[in-house]
Each structure stands twice: as structure tokens, then as C-alpha cells.
Image (cartoon, rainbow, N blue to C red; front, side):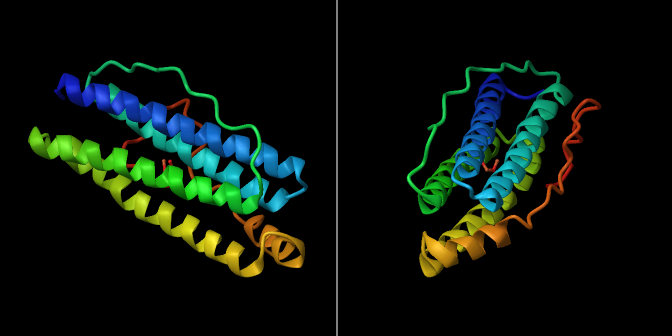
Length: 179
Ligand code: OFO
């Protein structure tokens, strides 16, 4: 059985992950409206990854016999100044998510909650990947430029990303499922 404080922080993290999904969905919509279909696809793939992240926490709470408390998801921005602006905001947001994951790991250590500490390690590793991907794309945007042929080429490259995670949650999400 996990503590009330742990249940609360994990419920808050479900909301953080759902906001991530919402934010990237908003970026996908804005990229589509700007004709950046590759960026739109990349962000929609990321949306699916975030939904999986949220559902793994959800299933962890259920597996622990704890209460799931779904909270209001705040409204993401509707528009973004440019593709570079999207990735600057993505990297900033992922750094915030990394901090929130680390807070869960810190609490698990403090409470000697070995189950949650083991569970959260998947997210600790995942956040390294998330920040690395965003940093690399931001570097490419800075090199290629945020307009013209450079942007066009990057749009084509990002459009090659495909969904590799589970997207049907009707039978639950194994807490060991990867992304
Ligand atoms: Fe869930 O990793 Fe991004 O937010």
C-alpha cells in the first residue's frame, strides 16, 4: 500500500502527463494550420506517448489499490510564433516534467517505498530521451533556420516519425510497458 502523499503526487503527475498530451496536440494543430505537416505528425506521435505515460501512472494507482483522481487539465496555448518556438516550449516543458518525476523519486526514497521507486525509474530514463530528442531538434532548427528550404527539409524528416507505443488502453496498460 502506498502513502496518501504518494497517491496525491502521482495523481498530480497524471495531470502533468495529460497536459503534455494536450500541449503537443495544440502544437500539432498549429503546425498543421501553418502547412508544417511533418511537425504536426511528430507532435501527434508525441501526444500518443504522453497518453501512455499518463495511463501507466493510472494503472499503477489501480494496481496499488489507490484512488485515481482526475483533475482539470489547463488550457494550452492556441498558437505558437514558429516551429522553433514550439520546440523551445517543448524543451522547457519537458524540463518541468523531469523535475516532477524527480520529486516522485525523491518521495519514494524518503518513504522507503521500493515499489514506487522501481516503477518511477522507467520515467527517469524516459525523460533523458525526451530532453535529448527535443534538444537535438532545436539544434537542427537553429542550424537549418526557421524558414525556407531548411525548415522544409526538417519538416520532411520529422514527418517520418511513427507511433511505436500502445494506443489502445481498453485492456489496461501494463506498468512495465515501454514507449
Ligand atoms: Fe511524459 O514525457 Fe513528455 O511530458
